Amino acid sequence: MEPFVLATDRVRLSVPTAADVDRIAEVCADPAVARWTTVPSPYTRDDAVGFVETFVAGGWAQEKDFTWAVRAPGDVDGPVLAMVGMSREGAPGVQPAGELGFWCAPDARGRGLTTEASRLVVDWAVDPEGLGLGVVRWRANVGNWASRRVAWKLGFRYEGLLRRFGAQRGVLQDSWVASYVPGDPRDPSEPWPAEAPAA
Image 1 (cartoon, rainbow, N blue to C red):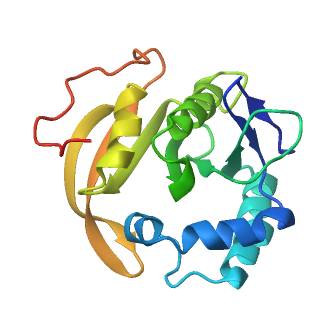
Image 2 (image 1 turned 90 degrees about the horizontal axis):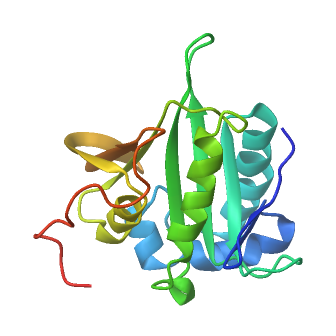
Image 3 (image 1 turned 30 degrees about the vertical axis):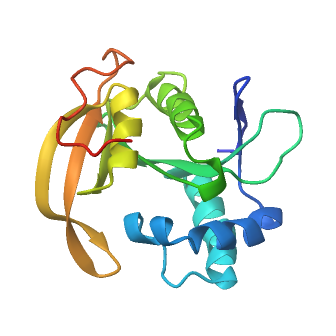
């Protein structure tokens, strides 16, 4: 599948390219990105090159991992503000499932851009003209309230906590999991957890 652009009046999503390597390396060196994602730590420019040239390009070519850089709206690609990806899995003859993942640059946080971009990607992924996914899952290490809030805003239903479920640099971490099924409301389906820290 050839990469394509998704856009609204607030964001432009396009495939990361070699021109984004330095910015990706800068953002992925942020302590919060390292803490909550599976990116290498410490993160180097070579890691960013490998991400763009191998993971991103290979994911699109194999139609398995679809990754977009989130940018300001417009007809020209600006600096990377966030990254959103959708993985697809499933055996032949079985409706596929997907998993949503994302990170946001420190200077772009708190503006709703990751939520806006993720909504675009989920809409495309569950559309029969897109990937036709039967379910989209989200997971995050326990304590990643910013990520959980994005999934909550998009209508993902919290399924629970799985102990030592997600691997992060060789260590199994407790994970929150949630899911979105086509036809679910696209707004929060449950109250925001009372135990969440104040924003």
